[in-house]
Length: 193
Image (cartoon, rainbow, N blue to C red; front, side, top):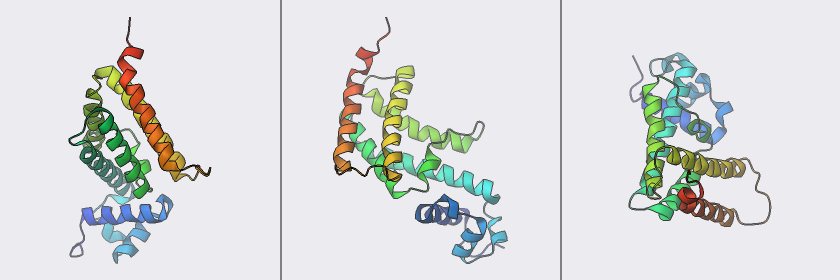
């Protein structure tokens, strides 16, 4: 019988906190079980070993990121929406350094939960890009552009690469401004003959 109060959600939540606090390398079923005050075999009642735990963590991270981006986009459009979503993306990644790498994976084919979690993030970005009249393949290209810019900045920032004595906030603001400028000109600059 599972320990009272221990659930799949509680196990995954604790695992998420462990990887954010100590890094992904610190996560094992033994370490997770110890942090929960149970024995490792007890976890199998809630997750299907490490592969099941990793899958649950990835889906949870994608859903959590989608929630943050969705909240940042509400009531905003065009440049304001891009600025809000970009700031939320960066903030979420900085607050969840262990979980962030899990959000950049494409969904596993045939995994409905993973596909839905991944779709939630993309749908928010597509909605924001619709304000620039970008749809279909243009929206895919623009999403890849936005994601590359944000991921590049976040990966360098979390990796400790920004050591020069210029404020990173200023650099990020300029990056987002450059993105919004590019998106404003996207259709005209890349229109097909």
